[in-house]
Image 1: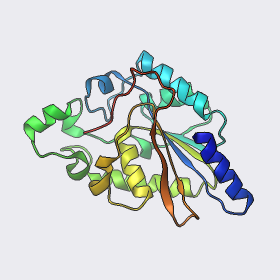
Image 2: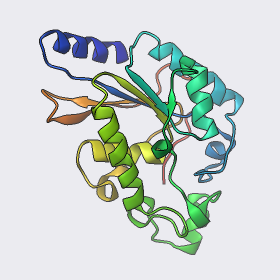
Image 3: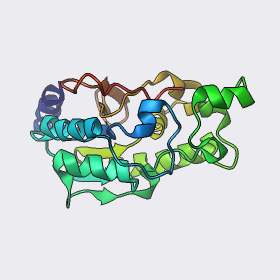
Image 4: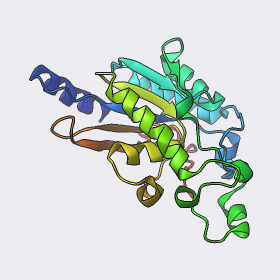
Length: 221
């Protein structure tokens, strides 16, 4: 599927229509993705399964070409990027960091809803953490950077931020839509365009093809 997407954009470029792709890679599994705890800024390494799947991401990406590769500064994203084969190539982008969950860091959704039964991350944000508006502002900056790259771009980040990024890419409010964009760890998604650069679309979402079966943790709320 990834190679098919690139071949189509290459054919479009040959006819003078530049239709680049933005590949979104979620980091591999960590201990907290297994337990369902919200992991914003706490530094956790990948599990062994997470390392294996990060390597497999690299196998899927090796035939694609990128003019830029960016990674979140968090350890789990950096490890995933390196294991995928982009060590020494990627630039660290602080805007790609995961949502700051504030007081909800390390808690599961069930534990959070014991405190606040009607809580929704993409609508309410987190006390002493980030609001949806602040996360969307970071996502908008990333969108501006990748659209100016003039070629295929690869990003390594975390699930909730990527969901906001996708909403911002297609111009819809994250508070209304991002909750519907489920993601698993070590997944690949692709943003792009339909006919021209004025028509941004989501071309691929949450592809976990060829990943080991025990690493299917959802970044869901």
